[in-house]
Image (cartoon, rainbow, N blue to C red):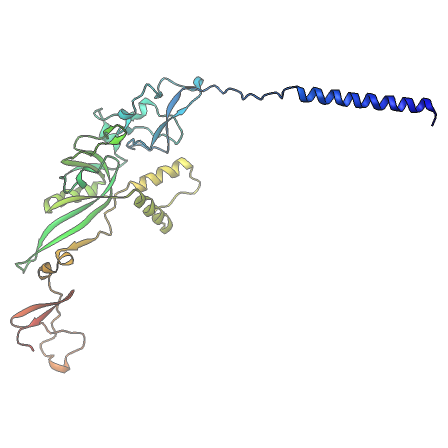
Length: 335
């Protein structure tokens, strides 16, 4: 290679190195551009439903909340944050069905004291009945509108041919929705805490047939309340769906399914009741329990020749002998 070509290669190499150094200095010295997030305009907050609210739903703190809403879509009928008083909305009743996430309008709620308030709180075909209670029978005031309770009837039962009286308690109704305590359908909240107060009457939602049952039960004895857990309704609903008692129609929309499930959860139940007597609670009350039925054998049957399965009815004076939990009838002088 001649001297002229060698000089040209060295010159090109120097130019390339200089260009690379200049480019590196330019990129290192320049500050990296800062990405700025686009500012999304925040609209006012409106009151929306946290879940589906069928007709007759009593508004509670967990059923509604304020959520940001586009400003151009806000209507005059919406409840706006900072203008609406949440405490005054608690205890109101839904007049028109509201789907989950939909804004709650002022015309969709009925306030206590308004005309037709209690009628709006009732589901289709349901009735409202009032039951007298006390602090002892009303769970000490820890029952609020919207809760579900069981009704327990306590009474004294007298036998036809017995001078003894039997104390008994029976769960006559289950899953009864509370509409109001005394004449109040709202819940007082002070400093974020619910105020517990006593009441003398409670208004519940029942079917027409159950309303007759409650009216008769009030004449028989004392009715007490048993507060139900929120998990009980969901567990019983899942069981009813699995057993086929509650059937969801094919092709039903999500709103229709939520409406049917809500009605099923709020439906009072008057079947499969349970009871307890004084003999189940105290051994000293077992003497008031009626004796077991005794079948008398035919008059011609006696001694070993008696037909199996027949027990001779005791004749003459008898005594009741209790051994543990078992009570038997013994004839005096038989042993």
